Length: 109
Image 1: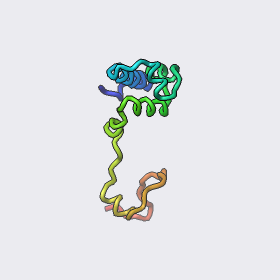
Image 2: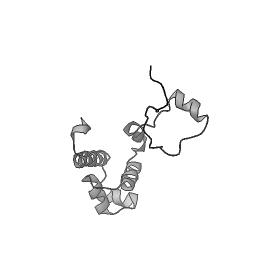
Image 3: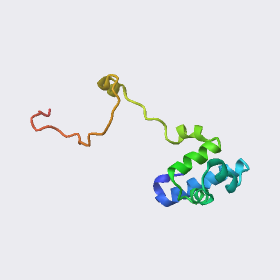
Image 4: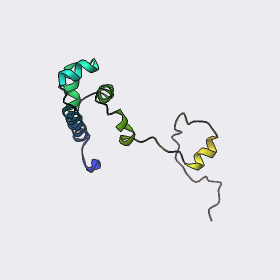
């Protein structure tokens, strides 16, 4: 599936359908899931229709035993060896926002 050709709402709807399929595979009703997660039934319905909140998604994935799949969903970014040497044990706190440009006083060969 090429998500780059899809609209944001289409991707959200696809995620909702997958959550619904996961719930049905676990043979859990929306009401049972709402009670188990301490969420409202409307929150579960919203999530399955692609309009849910991130915290609702996390609670539902936890209850359905699918939190382990988050690493394949968005893997932890790897640090390059050059960045590792530059940081020397420090973790990056924020982005600089600066663009890489050629300085005026540098000489191009």
